[in-house]
Image 1 (cartoon, helix red, strand yellow):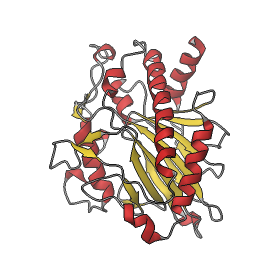
Image 2: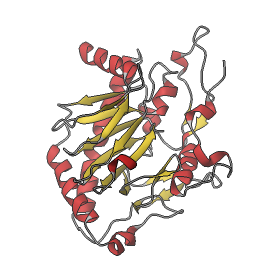
Image 3: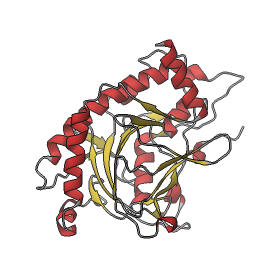
Length: 311
């Protein structure tokens, strides 16, 4: 296990990304979900729009996702990993509400396949944050309490073939705001990560049966910049559709995110002000849901930099 922990430490410091195999997730459950997802995205638009998400509930289908105010070339379907899940749905209404999953009538297998897969990948997520804690010199259980009522969700991403792939990004460059992302991608590929050493974009080759793990902003804050979330983006394909399934592992909505006291001292003071995860999530969601103008207020592109302490 020492070699595993050392490998995770090196990957988190150098890349913010790594791939895992022998992870314990039953791949048959992933295949069932992929099949149901393909059937769902192949439905006529009016069928998919019966479960479209709205301002009051962020779960369900959506086809005008924006990342950093740029519209993405994809369709998505989101569902919470934990039922019930509670979170604020708007920064103007901090009182948490229950997020309700919206399941389509067809394909009928989607709901069960989604719930079974979410349980599998949730177990892996808890294992991974335990290993990341050990790699930081902490107790393996250090993060567990922060995920007691975790605000995590699974996204089904469908990227249609694009006739002008050089003009469009499936998802523009961004960092993930949560703690950890566990990504399953099909064999088409398209994910690129930005190498920290020189800023080059490196394509992540799909590896059968592997999951791609990336560190999110929250672990960057908890580690006080020892680990850094890394920029990534998705290139589209001119001929093939692409399916990817990220699991976004996020802490409970009431968690105040700040550098861990064990990793802060006089030589290494806290680099971030604390912030409430639920309110941050609601604010980010509001900006992604509609294309906001830059002058419409601070919520437009809230990012980790807004909480950085200038030392």
